[in-house]
Length: 378
Image (cartoon, rainbow, N blue to C red; front, top):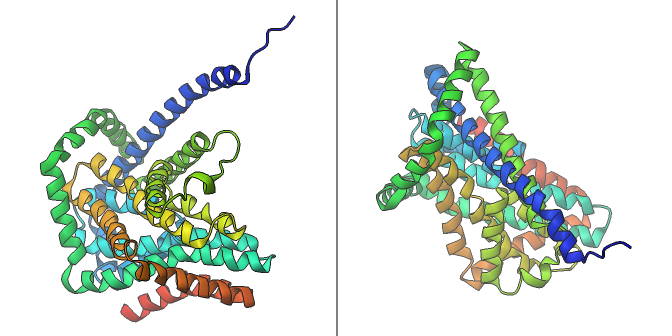
């Protein structure tokens, strides 16, 4: 006779080995992430003058820097990757906070392309496509409006750069050195490996930059896959039942979930099918999207602490503060919160009448307009 095993016991026995592998995978991905950052920073130092001089020249005009950050992130579809690269470049000590902050603003706009692309999955169903476009573009509209408010201040007064530098100094004084020291335990073996790899590349240090960016992308995508398997193990969660209880709760869960996933693109894209199928309203999904904007800044903060540089930390703080200030402006006030929703709904209605409008919006907003602004400003 066989021994009956309850479903709960079977799940426990089944998941214990999986938990061990998940912990090992998490440690391996963290080590890969830190090694990629170290390799990128030292490769930039080795390449030095020409490459970084060209980078500084390209970003000397803040508007050009914003557009480059936007296009680069739209192509990579990951603000976590682009901001981690920018933090690593800042860690090389040869680029200032002021020159990189406009690229951070652009990266926050560029990352919104993913949720808009996801909405095209409903293009065959007119009513669902209208709701999907509204859900996909409310993230775009929010970040564009925030950029319209903060970029002119940054351009004229370096408002965001100055606050970010002060915040980084404040964080170091309140315990940042201890966090730098914590990462320092991994510094020696990772740095030793970095030097060995750079010696192998020899004079081809630019290859180290390409390899480092590839490893950063791989590690961040690994985090996404790993935490997605952990958080969504088993039956598909009915998010509408426990995430959208209140706007504040939705905001907090959006921030927390995105911090774990290392991807605002994934978290915000998850809202598109829920809104398209009327499982939640756009008004319910919007606070979650705002929270995702804050949660995605964890990757840059992790990269900055790994670099052990106050300049790198100021860049990560700029990323956080841009999103946090945007939430402070729009979330608490119903009239202001309604503005990005109304604009997104209008775009959804136009796309519902003519699907080509959505495609034109995507191409113009993320590629043609930034390229035109670069041409005019150069």
